Image (cartoon, rainbow, N blue to C red):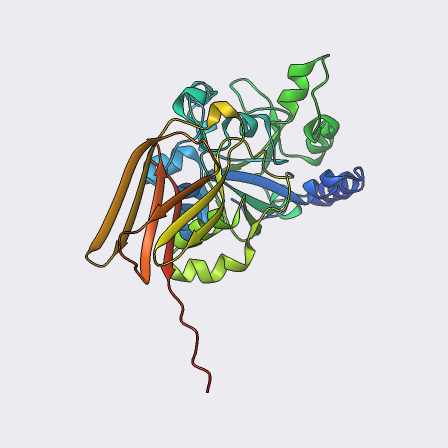
Amino acid sequence: MSSGRKPDADEIEEKLAELRSAFSDHRSWWPRFVYHSADLPNAASILNRGEILSRQRAGQCGVLEKDSAAPEIIGALTEEQKDWVRLYFRPRAPTQYANEGIRPKQAYEYGAHMAVPVFFLFSAPSVLTQEGCCFTKGRLRPGGTLGQTADYFCSIDFRKVYHDSYLPAENKEAWKDARHAEVLVRESLGLDHLLRIVCRSAPERDTLLHLLDEPTRAKWADKIIVEGGRRIFYKRGVFIEKASLTPQFSTFTFFLGDWDKRGPFDAKARWRDGSWTSRWEKEWSFTSDTLRFKLRDPHPRYVIELWFDDYLIYANRFVQTTEPEIF
């Protein structure tokens, strides 16, 4: 992305300030950021690499760990359109509603899902005012229009873009499409203007940190946070809300969501420490919100990984701490 500033950048910043004051609820902070979501392995790869690549570039470089995009929608794009890094003006876009959360294959709504979503929140003024950054008024599609000037930006109907309640019966699809309005950056987007990385729960934050290399973890740990309410995520499907690791037990409490998303899953767990490994595999459907494993022998340290339908949903290292002696 070009580091130059658009000649009409001040007008874009003025519009953003106007948008921030236009709402008195949770949407008042939405215009501060532009948003990119990635499934957990892709999110770790982005942070370790230090940039977000377009779909085209990620494929060429072999760094697209998980593909969460709907095949039919992606298949309709031109090769040139696949060379954009795509962000939204808002979280909670309609596509996210359809694909967020772990769900069994029969509950995929568009042929794919984002099992463990992570949100990247970039400074909106910094990204939108950079030369080459473009905007759309709805979902990126063949034949769709886009622009990069302040005039085009100000012509976007943000009343529809930021709409966050039931869709009006009249022109429903137009309102829905407006929620998909996009921010486009050619080929790659560095992380200089990344302000927050948001996870749904503490265990998912722990997993993301576990997947980062040590320098990257030290750099970003303070900016990786857990969402406090339903303002970024829809919290659909299944996800881990709490994890408890001890020498003898690994216990997980799940948010279960809709009944049709509770299984069955091809569930796998693996524990390892040096030469010791232990495995568990089972077709699993939730009848309660807790999944608890008892290790045959206590282990003061281990790495655990939990997979549902070949999606990594949790990974962390447990090390038993000992209380210091008191003299």
